[in-house]
Length: 487
Image (cartoon, rainbow, N blue to C red; front, side):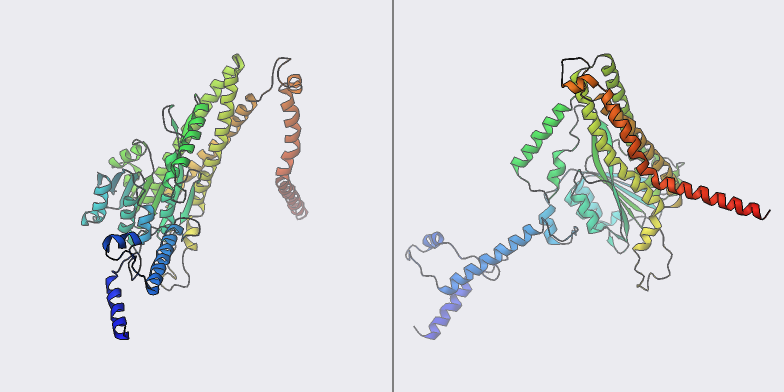
């Protein structure tokens, strides 16, 4: 066979291979079985080395692309969620919930309400109807439910230079994990808050940390076996906690933008959660309406969360008082078990409530400083311009009050934890039962051990304060002595 005929055959074979977006410039060659089906007259077709090479290269390219796609989901992936990237659609499109979206436009003179679902909200974000009118000073978008289509439409809607949602904040919303605590993050174009809502639930309500929150996080490997195991473990915990106080802990995500837009997102919340705030917005004589201050709306959401926490502490106080009466009148093993559960829950809720106090203190004290840290001093456009924080002076005044309330909650938790721990001890009151040393000493052993430890350890924590007090007394004495000499 001549070289001309050989080259012509090469061109003909190359033209028979269609282009494919998955396998690069050449499509995946058909298998031997497909060749047998399409060419019965030639049961053993010969494959040239160049065809085998093409097939191997295409397989390697396909494997590399698949590996890159899965690597983007796990550890080492690029931080943040940018809906403009095509890979994000593949990664997060499985996150879909039926959401309820409230859009409230208001100012001191008027107020407008609108309620939408997913498809309607996505269409609204891309239409001219979403443009704010001239009288609108504040826009509040309240979303119940986390869904990828809603988050993506929200991000595309706010993609301007002064109202852009940061990819790290969007990642925090989509990677909702129950163990994440409350925090405040400052970005150039918006303030992002993540605050845990504590709410008392009935016996028939869902678990404190539902399995759906783990299923929503793309960084968690999903399989039916692991999901079933978590459901079984949660059912066991619920059975042990039967008859005790049930408290749900769910996060609320808040975006405060520079253009006066406030976005609040909750994964699942009762419809009446934000009802007090919407009622205040309907009345023109309230401070929330008359001030037209977006930071006051954020402060109102924080106030709502703090009030829920106060209700939880009051409910625990009532339950511990009831269990204390049962122990003093007729103690039972089940009552001691409930006290152990309540003690553990109080420690857990104290851990989740303390970061809210730190968050409120940071908003009140370091708001302007954190905004100043975001300014690029080398940029001539921002040089010499005044630094403005996200929280107004009026909102900071109200935040002082709620920080005090959170401090009182922490103080109330201490005696409640002590009471539940003390009455939950496993000391026996009758001889012949339990371990001998516990039967002999009963609860007196608790005071014999705890009081000396308190007397020894407490001074170690107050030594710096004692030194400051001594230095203050010496300074005052020296000043008084010096003043007497000149008299």
